[in-house]
Length: 423
Ligand code: EPZ
Image 1 (cartoon, rainbow, N blue to C red):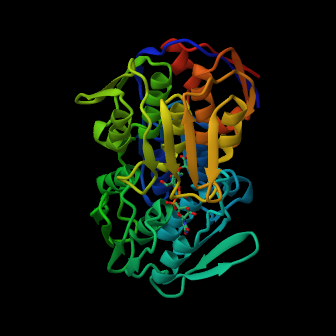
Image 2 (image 1 turned 45 degrees about the horizontal axis):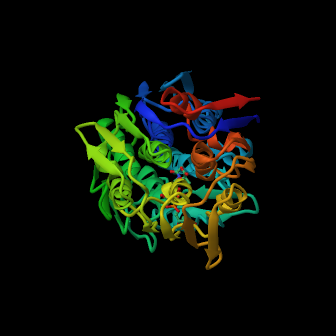
């Protein structure tokens, strides 16, 4: 478990190289179930969620070599059920079910875990599986998908998502790669992590078009025809945004290298509105926050809207803005566990509309104290606030932060922060 101890007041100045994206690496590792031969996935973040994904692949019977940021997978799966002890550890465990269905034509998964951001239903995933021809049975703790025809279900279908769910879009793509005929997903999620997973699948021989738009077309290819390749995972746009907020709250400056600038545009636009200088270069972003932070209104939305995964971190930053800012959380119904902890540090935040609308009055005088991280991005927001707080902050629950940040302590200390990890 352990805690972070952060002494606030230091300016962040320097350069950080951004590692691979958790939310691209996880579906790409799941996609490996579909593909024969050796797959070498590089730039994989060495985080606890990836270690769970490796455990799932091994539990399914695959041979997996995991060396820090490279995962090499070979062999074939020998079972079609994702064990409860793994399913409940993260949301993206359900994406492994989509890959199992795509490969074997039937499978089971205990309901997924993940950050407590609200109900997090899976009816859109079930709808996708049903429309691809599976019999979907929901038991108390798990989802069972049986094949109903000689094509082991997987019949191409036109599937409309009434909400552009990232996970459901990924799952339908994975389950339909070997379908008979084409599958069209209308109102698909457009997040860059979906594009990365599709780029990997196409590099192995899949025929998928439209990833990154709201209509994705998956042309079913011959069963087991996908062959392994080497693939480099995209950089993590949310880690980039997190570090931008960390530098900005200390009125510092930072160069982020190895990042895809286009992916960070929604964050860049809002940071510029806050009076932060953001310069985009070919594969790096420079920010300079010497001027006072200006108040803004943030509405989270599906891509290319402002990412919900940056809501908590931006809220911490806006406690230091001059004037009153607003944040509307439009994706999750309970992404507010960080609010009470920021208030403990002296932030002036009013929560409205059942924790979906927040009024942040700046500039608050934050003071170090003991706080608790209860989810991944909420934990990151407490790190950001602690950098600007007077005195020392102790953050407990850092196992949540370690699910998505490989080296937040080392990265930030390298550019001027004073963070200690005590086990
Ligand atoms: C992915 O979660 C990400 N996780 C999340 O990142 C991210 O916040 C989210 O997409 C939105 O961008 C991974 O990729 C592992 P959704 P996912 O399905 O797939 C509702 C992080 O911090 N919904 O787009 O679960 C759902 O309840 C994590 O890295 C349904 O109603 O996101 C939520 O309100 C947190 N029915 C909204 O859609 C469904 O069947 C967004 O969910 C599915 C989802």
